[in-house]
Image (cartoon, rainbow over all chains, first blue to last red; front, top):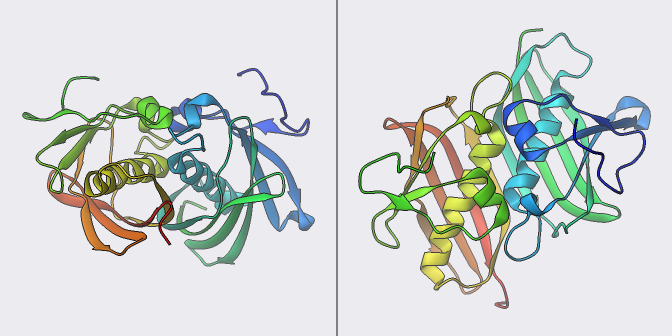
Amino acid sequence: MADRPAGLPEDAEELSAVGFNQYVGPLYRLPDAEGGAVKRFAFVVAEKHMNSAGSVHGGMLMSFVDTAMGQTSRAGTSATGGSTVSLNSDFVGPGRLHDVVEARVRITRRARTMVFLSAELYAGDRLLLVATGLIKVIGG
Amino acid sequence: MTAPPLPGFVPTHLVDPFEIFVGPVFENGEPGAKTYAIRADARHMNRRGVLHGGMFMTLADLTLGQAVWDATDRAPIVTLNMQTHFLKSAVEGDIIQVVPELVRRTRSLIFMRGDFTVEGEIVFTASSVWKLLGKD
């Protein structure tokens, strides 16, 4: 387990991660909001996440939202995995070094094997990214 | 890891810390018609042992952005939007290639797309819209 970065909420739990998520992480789960309708995740921006313009790299924001949607698509089910089929991202505003970036993810519709999701990434009150995604769930 | 995955390819000059972190990426050809290539390694995989979607999207932002830079003499740019489709998994050792395509350029916007292939088969597609900063 990595040291907990400054600014991370105390109720954040580190996601167990391998491969890419471990390499770009640590990534965290936050308590649900709105009675479980909103799943929340977080990471703290480090130097490795940046671009040369002093903002968080779009690839990191999309990686984080992809993981957050994948986790949400399986939450409360017996699914063993999922494959992202499509993901659409609008880059609304820049993330900055040391920001605590929070993902808020909702399921728009869950069908038998397909899950439609929407997500927003915030740093405090600043909206960074809005996304919609489609995930095919495996197992469960 | 730093050896070119294909003959004739040279390392792409990366400046963004996140791109250097997930790279290296290699390229071949002239500006405006470059092929980019990366060899998928263990760092890029997810828990199911296939390339993480985030790595595909990072590769798309990186390569389409490089092509925008080539088209604009390295103007300051930001990604406004990216749409991606995941057609087929890639696994460790796969060499993923793309030839970014500039679809349309206006005074302030550039529309890009790319088909990402493994052994000639499309595995991932991306379309992105870029803003030229300071142009209205």
